[in-house]
Image (cartoon, rainbow, N blue to C red; front, side, top):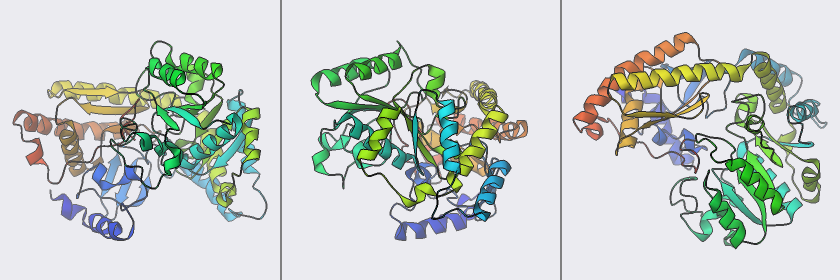
Amino acid sequence: MNLKEKNKKGIELYQKAKEIIPGGTGLLSKRPEMFLPDLWPSYYQKAKGCYVWDLDDNKYLDFSSMGIGACILGYADDDVNQAVKEAIDNGSMNTLNCPEEVELAQMLLKIHSWAGMVRFARTGGESMAVAVRIARAFSGKDKIAFCGYHGWADWYLAANLADDKNLDGHLLAGLTPNGVPRGLAGTMLPFHFNKIEELEKIVKENQGIGLIVMEPMKFQEDTSDFLTKVRRIATQINAVLIFDEITVGFRFNIGGAHLELGITPDMAVFAKGISNGFPMGAIIGKKEIMQAAQTSFISSTYWTERIGPTAAIATINKMARENVPEYLEKIGLAIKMNLLELAKRHNIDLTVEGKPAMLHITFNYFNHQAIRTLFTQEMLKRGVLASGGIYVSLAFEEKHLKEYFKAVDEVFPILAKSIEANRVETDLEGPIAHSTFQRLNSIIS
């Protein structure tokens, strides 16, 4: 099967896009080079449930990122779409404020009883920027100890001003922070998940740590009460503890993952799955901290539009009504167990990490990236979007699992033979995929 011919329109459009859009697309995680360079379909015309139709009318089962983790309920969910359509018909923007933002704020505060106030944005990256601005305004301190990936903004990329290896393991190794003011050098100090001694060293050697920013959960388990110790340190040095819940929030439980972990932050940030594919971001926090927003200037027109809050309300209500986290746990566990069984059957050295609702797949070979690319290539030929991770969705049904595993059962023998013959690179019909995001507590975007 010739993938270049099969995906001709999408491949050609992406080549045009790179001439007029820097990088071809606004999200690094959606660049075809991250999946299957020169062969990936790149664009969609329609998506429903867990299926995607590309520009060439090919229908694909999406067992990859499901909208980069945003569509927990599945693509174009009927209930969320209906609520959004009504909001559009009644006017999505107005001189006055929409009441839905108050309703959503009350909903989030009821779920997170420790928090006292909420601010809204529309994307994860800008929500983190808002959270950091508020926390710095409250603490009066500039320096931030951080763990994990937290977006594209200056405050985060400043880590690489002092040492271009500071973000290695967080983002892309050796990332050049061009365009970030040199004056921010020394404000960002990295530590690894589960390595409390690194945070202790940062605190000992640096005065003025006003914030500790981290993801509370990813693919690694908390060992030795790591999060409890982080919480204790933040309290001791009067630093604002911010949990970045953009990826994990509302995926493992209704609300932030920290509720399940039993660790209370001072602020928490949500986006992605909170609104099932519609732009929405939320920053919640203790009232005295959130009030510091009034001492700075944090304001934007489209943070007040109606669609985002409406989608979030409908999404959260459906998650609670249908106990979505429990379903994701069940389906994800089935995916994990079947993948491991198929790998064993076909003599593939495979590791499946993470909680069932969000899985990461690792081929345990020196040329793992080439093998993962070959896996993506062969799955694509069988009508499945597949990569190094699976964001489990409510849209996944038993029939979809059967379709996915049938493809895997055909592809794993191909991988095994290619690995055995040491011809993985030559079996690729295009270049090896670029490395994905690397975090200190995970390795997928």
